[in-house]
Image (cartoon, rainbow over all chains, first blue to last red; front, side, top):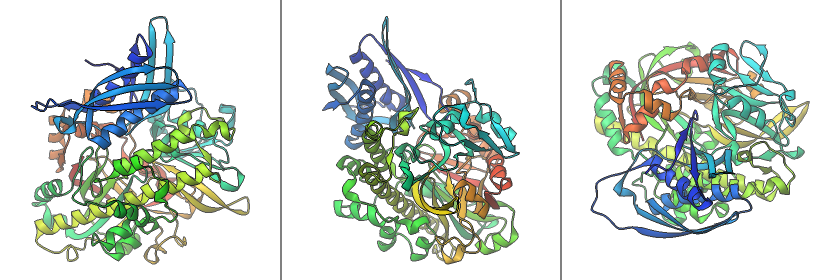
Length: 138
Length: 484
């Protein structure tokens, strides 16, 4: 299921994600990276690889950007597309999660997201939960 | 469309100023190179706001500059140039270089004429597509040990030539001879090494390409003679960068420099401009790591050119030397360089950021090889896959832009808008009717990179030529396009 909406940007791609809590927000933005760039192909390979991701930061914005960039970086290094993100602990400064990935060869990669950026970054809490906007360099 | 509040002050037909009064905190005015036609597009996004934001950088000298291909990026606009005075607390910003460090372009001439090879373009395109690894995360045949990878980061193209992927003359025709000094592999993270591993000799994806082109217009007969160029001559252009290694270095150092803002008491309107003084441990480390990625990119383009030469040999059955496949030049367009300029009568070392801009040194500049001392530095401007590309040379007038010119056509339509409005099959037919064959590893890339998504490069080049910051030599049109 698509976890994001697209924001127009001339050269890159912006997204908006919404969730009831921080954990949902980080998960939606993280999964969006791969929904935007990769398309699953029919495969018999059902194996899921588990990777532990722990990040610390001085602020929520930093944590958000570091988390997304860590997912991109690990995905490239491990040649994996992440299909699920299980966040066990999160606050403004820490995140502990397990990423479940499938081999990249099971996917058709349509575009390459290089990084998540601070430019025009928004993370806000409102009455119904959390909302974030972020621009990816593609 | 984005509502734009910036009122530009006209200096002349090709230069427009954002006054310092636009935003409290701007240390210098913004200066945009454009004509009225291009300004209409420029007003559509947030690029001008980004020009104003760059003017906040500590130590910035004269202007926050924007080339006519300027468009909305992150942090710096794409097409932005900013020089900071190192002795005056001038900073270096990884966001002023970008994630694809030393993304750049090289242009190779051949002795071939269009009439000789017009029936073989398809064979050449298919051969190149099969022999040059392209696409996201593509891996090349050039496998490296950890020791060799470190060597590439120091020696750049010189490593490639020493290993048989080219000749000494290629180095003369590469900015910094393909290896900028001061690269330190010890300040590159393990993760960056891993991300760059196995990607040497690969084209990458997105707007990266390899094109077979033909010269369709000469502008300056003397300069064309100097470069050995004629109407109808076949050329090859390669556009690629530092791949995953560069992305990771930019990410590692942006992560670090976000904390420098408080440490060095720097106020910026956008954290993606995060920076540190050039003369600080963080600034020095970033530049040493950035140089590693720059050298890796030069080695990469050198290897890609080698694979191209071999592909031509296979299809045409003649050695690349006999085909006259000589490098004209290779330029970086995402880089920060320390260069000397006279400011108010005093010679200063400036850190010149070119984010989507090309260095354009004038005739006589000491950094130029003997063969280009009289002509000025070749400035290579790729366009989109359906229109033109250009060769220009640098001029003395470009001193006002810290010897910088544009780097391409510049996007005007977002990737998502392009995908929604352009039909792939119609586009391919249109290109075919113009005699252009396209092969891409991802069908989506062709649509995202369609000509309609870009400004007309002819308009962009007109501005840099008429503003005098570069001089047109000749124009090419594409015949065969290989995309990642």
